[in-house]
Every structure is written in C-alpha cells, then in structure tokens.
Image (cartoon, rainbow, N blue to C red; front, side):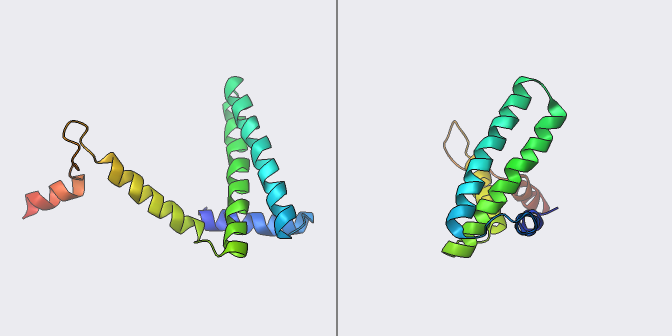
Length: 117
C-alpha cells in the first residue's frame, strides 16, 4: 500500500465509523489517538511483543495519515507523499557529507556514471 492509499482508507474508515469530520473534532481525535498508539508502540517494545509493535506502528501511521489529510484539506498543505519524497531526498543529500572534509560525497550513481564516461 502507498501512503496515499492508507490516507484514503483512513478517511473512508473514519466516515464509516461515524467519526466527526469537522476540522477541530477530527484533528483533536487524531492527535489524541496518535499519542495513545505511540504509547502502545513503546509498551510493545518494552514487553518485546514484536508482532504487536508492528500492528501498533500501523495505527500510528494511520493517524499520521489522518492528520496530514486534514492539513491538506483545510490548510492547502502539499500532498503528504510528496512531502515525504522531498524529505527523503533532503536527508539523502545531507547523508552524503564527508565528516572529515565536510564536503559532499559522490553517490554510487555518480561514481558509476564517471566510470562509464
């Protein structure tokens, strides 16, 4: 499943469950549930209940999807999957810094391209 598909599933599921869809109620509910589910992830880790940790991680992801949907719908925020892609690119760029020289290291693709020239 993609982030977009999980986000759409969460929207549809919340409507079927009768969760209020007005901004303030939906956001408050999602933030509270996100906090609860994050605690359940931590509890699962402490108890070494690895299967439950994965299930609770899905719950965390679904409420993150709900919150990002609300930001898109009510505040015109960028699509979350695009934000994630941009963030991954930024993190990758930062990770290419050589700690000794503080200069960008070349990526495997750049090194391969140089070999092929």
